[in-house]
Length: 262
Image 1: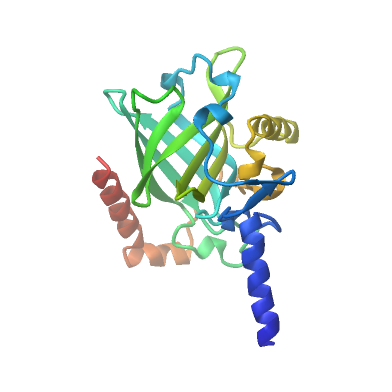
Image 2: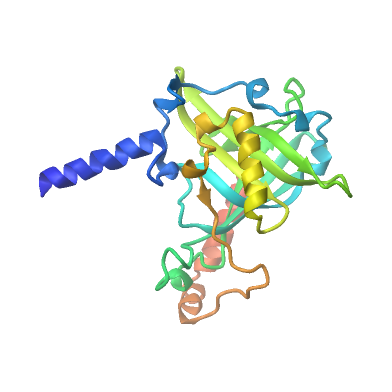
């Protein structure tokens, strides 16, 4: 039994290192291979930037984005209803990313999802700055105690309004030539996307060379989502969390994170 357990553990870690077997959230990417070539470290922005970023207007980027798919080993795949509400600072030199998440998702925990203290959501704020020495589309973001570049790789405009309606973000961090973190977000202004729209987004990510960093369909997780009009969860469990002050604690944590980033 011990040998089987050890084998299962190594299989889990190995799959995570490869970003395969549905474990893209655990991909440490120490030795990724793509089409027979080993890919280490992080790419430059110019290596992944797409022509859609020509004449990129940062003022059209803020607002509410729905996360449709992601590749990120720091983000549990059981989360749902994730959104990013992005605001620019008044001077236009910084930004605030309000990352909202709920969990676990109803399908992943059908007996307990509505009993979770974060069934109605929790917030994590990421703070960024716009460096005038960076090309448009590169944002310097702070999270988990480090600063890393957040690349806006691709945007798709609404043909009628000219507003950005889809976006691909890519975060990458390396130490000593070894890639220790990578995050990829497929985002939309709409809470859902058709299979055709997602296929087109994957093709744009592949064209950008991002499949070797985790953007292929088998290495990304789809975000579960309840209808936007669905009411907040209100049951005995949520009443208990409120009674012991969990909601106030979450608000306090959110405020301390927000204040600490300014």
